[in-house]
Length: 225
Image (tube, rainbow, N blue to C red):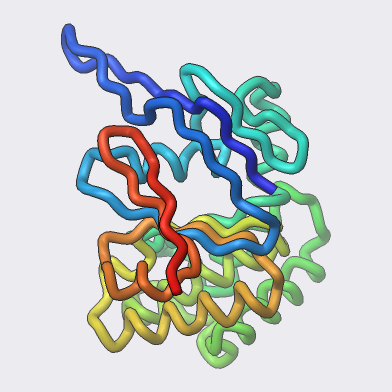
């Protein structure tokens, strides 16, 4: 479970101080699903970075399963990201010179399994996203939707507790957007993930049981029917 208390993140922009987050209080239950929406520059990605242990707040607590991500050592944060949190981004972030299988295997390297286990787990993850026949293809040989499926497999191959997605359908057309969201929702249910997604797409936001709207660094929670 995530428990955020008084989370504030300040940046300096010239002589001006900007509060990207301004005293955010938020609870996300294990297995919960939350969509974050808001205007550009409103703090959406900053909040996701806090949840993903990619940045620390200026003030407040970001507690994941009893561990305050705001105060633990950098080494511990790195371990939490490697073991417990999967990331999916708008731009896929695949290594162009590696095959789909090799890209997925990169997520396992920090965890130390032997090469044979890495290959087997990567193959299983790619099968789970419908790419069992594309394992040997390079990113440039695949469509945008297929590349995003590889990125999802890479996020899930380490069997994380949390899946964080930042505009995962932003580079896809409408039909592929719906395919990817159906996949993500199915994997969320199948694996019991805690799933948090940033999107500007209101149609996708309405599919989630909870919506966090963030404006000027402040969060309002809406329960979708």
